[in-house]
Amino acid sequence: MTTISLCMIVKNEEEVLARCLDSVAGLADEIVIVDTGSSDKTKQIAARYTQNLYDFVWTDDFAAARNFSFSKASMAYCMWMDADDVLEPQEREKFLSLKATLDPATDVVMMKYNTAFDEGGKPVFSYYRERWLKNSPALRWVGQVHEVVPPCGKIYYADIALSHKKLRAPDPDRNLKIYQKLLAENQVLEPRQQYYYGRELYYHCAYADAAAALEAFLDMPAGWTENKIEACALCADCCQKLGQEARALQTLFRSFALDVPRAEICCDIGSCFFARQNYRLAAYWYLTATKCERDDTRGGFIRPDCYDYIPFLQLCVCCDKLGDPERARAYNDKAGACKPDSQAYLFNKRYFEKRKPS
Image (cartoon, rainbow, N blue to C red):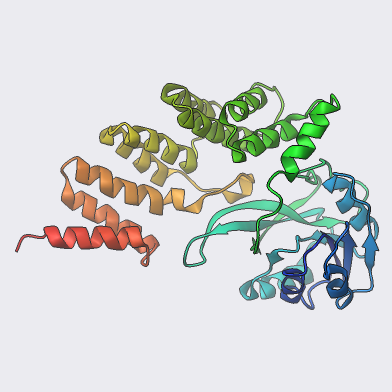
């Protein structure tokens, strides 16, 4: 059986830290907690779970703080979590099974990260992240913000998910300020930083600047394919919000030169045509979305509903608009099979029941 050091960086997490640590109780062989300047009871709570509690002076560099936490680990693998992450009870047995059977030659264990949920608690946004990393100087964090450990060596994709369940939003300006500081110091953003800089501008509704930053990233010869596909989607949404519909569509279609179509992109194209009331073309792209193969191991951001529920629901509306109520009803039934408690599905169901001939 392998051994694991749970390594965390925290600051003012008194609301969630105990919830996080309780969710992984008994799973890690060691807990390392690095505090970057808490002014609440975070350190007192952390001290109930571990003696390996350290202070780290914050320098606007998440990678530096995480690497410091890894430097204090003594087990075979380092595992990271944020304080508002939890391991759901149904994942514990899978976690323990992997810990008991993991090939020691494995360098990186990737696990799914669920970060958004529907009203029933079902994940609607997820992606794989490096979660267990062999305790080696070769596997360390890079990036002042949106930090990452570039996976290398033997990589294993585990059928285990952690869930990010924040109770309050972090400082919305923190990440953007870090990027702006880097740019003010005349630092050149590498491709991944450029991509996330564009995302931060997008989150701040600076759509023209975000589109420019994302297009600059797309024009870079380097850069991860999944980031570039997502950049196409974000840039297109910026264009839509700026009233540039043709540019939005062109940007979405640009993603097809990078790899096979993703359902997320097809749904976005369908949405463009739906907004134009071109229901025939919208239906084509929503139907195409249902035929796309979902592959979470590519590592990109996944919106699971784009592979079934959303396109089925939209196909229902398109078919109804096109005068084909029976097909519309059938697609609504398919959406209901995905989410039986969906308010949109139930609304459509009542709508069709009222239209039944007496």
